[in-house]
Image (cartoon, rainbow, N blue to C red; front, side, top):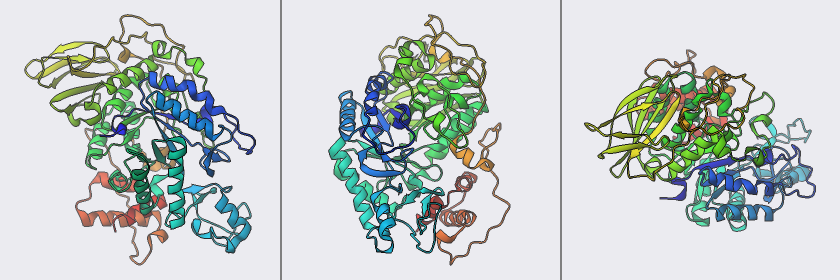
Length: 576
């Protein structure tokens, strides 16, 4: 097994966390990255073993319009600063992965600047997609080109050009030789060319043992990207959505159904998260803040690799705005959260879960088996080498009892509370506190834990308020009983981009799936995928699926949820 199979990730958006200027004037470097050095000890203290940090390299604005892949953004410092930062992480046993923005570049990238200067005679003309000197754009270049997401600030690279492939692969080699990076998160992986990703995978195998490639994918059958030829993992947006809406709607069926749906894709080690730099903070999303606890118990125990976005371990707010993501990417001073592990119930929980995860191999490698499921209670097992670990969560305002089939041992212990229960008749009878969760392990299989106890803040508060001031430690209330303030439910990135496809409340004993659209779309077989509309591509993909076997409602939902043209084109081509 590899390091990433057991990893617990911490995610930093460095331009935001360091308070860097929004615009890069390419002036002398300012070593803001060095202000993040104290965060390394914090990352280790809360039990994280890997860091995803990015974007890092020279750009003009938010970081995803790269202008130089081999130079740390001037607003963050120098290459030497980055080299020292990664080295400091490695000294603490923390692996590091960078953001790889390889689908597009910024307009200040050398190849695009050459096209602006030399036009039809530029040797880099074929480095980009569909450069057309019969067109124009808002920058008055006198030519048009393909972009990402409708933004001409982001110029789409021609990933089928061998020169572009070789250049990006050389960038990866440079990052390993210069900074000793351990992997890459590929931005916009759902629109990357599959042959290009295969080239990246070959390079990954060449540059470093266990070099990890993880891709940003919103929708689709994740096995198209996660396999032996392309990527090791992708972002698990399906589970992200289920975790917050399943709790807000008191519907554990949605979460359990999503887990089964993902399991049907194969044994994929997906990158699990409850928030990131593109979606609202989980603390803002939850209608009842007490649900922070069961949400994170599931994040750390369901199949996949858990990740915490910087600041969310403190329970901070972050509401997505129409024209800005600044509130999702704030500057934070670590000194403001001193002793958070001891005094902040959210941080205490995350640190406890990190410790449990590190000492419980079944949570990284074990099989998954559903044990009990209602709208408000959910239990499952992770089994490995004869050891059964049992996870219980409760989204109700009252405690709930569960009778669950146990492993071959005499006694179980709750790792978060220290509660011990005997196995009787092959089962354990446990009580799960209101709005909480617990991880039960065979007694003797785990180190003894001192339960983390916290005072419970008030359950209601204004939506705009942040978590209460640090709370004092009490002796009678376990960590998973944390009841935090209530606030409005918010929607995530994917749902905001496609509100008409957002799942509504789920109250039945199966996750709801949308009906197939009434509109009939006829697909012209002579059309190229690039010329098809989104609706035509969706129908064409469903037809391809039907050739391979029955098409379920969930498969239809996955197709109709994907409204990104480039992603659908790649999906359609993958059937060939």
